[in-house]
Length: 284
Picture 1 (cartoon, helix red, strand yellow):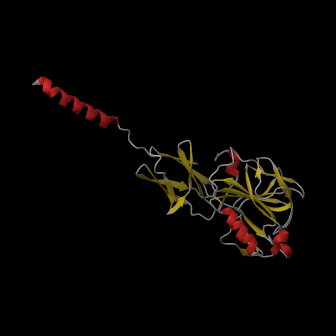
Picture 2 (picture 1 turned 45 degrees about the vertical axis):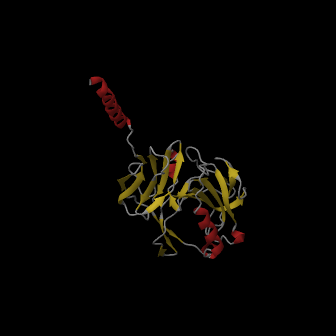
Picture 3 (picture 1 turned 90 degrees about the horizontal axis):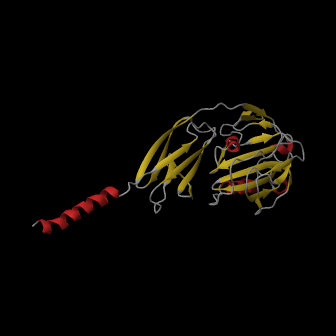
């Protein structure tokens, strides 16, 4: 009797062991910076066990693209001075789980400037420059071209910081903020690429870029692009790849400009973010 009963016991023991050994699915999320402020880029890194179902990241019903690297996924969430400070909720899905993560977006004060434009500097934007710049900002190239921290595109002092609110010819621009950093270099001062990427936009004042002036746009990949405005000379052509530190042009005062300077704007998923944290390795 005992001999006939032993196989059944062995079967039960094996079944119990297999159930205990099955790994549990685990959705892991890392966010930086943990205390973002208006204008910051928020990095969301997601680790999942089931690669057959890619994760998703959303904020207020807006989904952000994720890119895989060595088994992890990352989404970049832009914020701007036009966002409301306070709690924001990130919804992360993966491994058949949903995680709602509360994140506190800190307020930040921005200077106010009064700008007076006249003559050619006050001309309205043309349809061709609006369409070409908008198409450039929509680029979401799967490849990540940049590596490590960004560098300064010019060595001159910063004359206007990111996020400044402005009065133009006495009228406050409600939905406007300064979408970049201005460097007060002189005419002909060299401009270099702050990070590697593909030159995907070249426009000239003579071709209708009345506001942007002579402009170069670099696609750094994965929804991150840089624009360089008011140039005097353009030293690169569309479609070429550039390295960090490579000269792309010189400072001028073309377009809506009251004097020689470089405007560098950094866009993440079509939103202008503060470029400064990118220069200090916050996003790699």
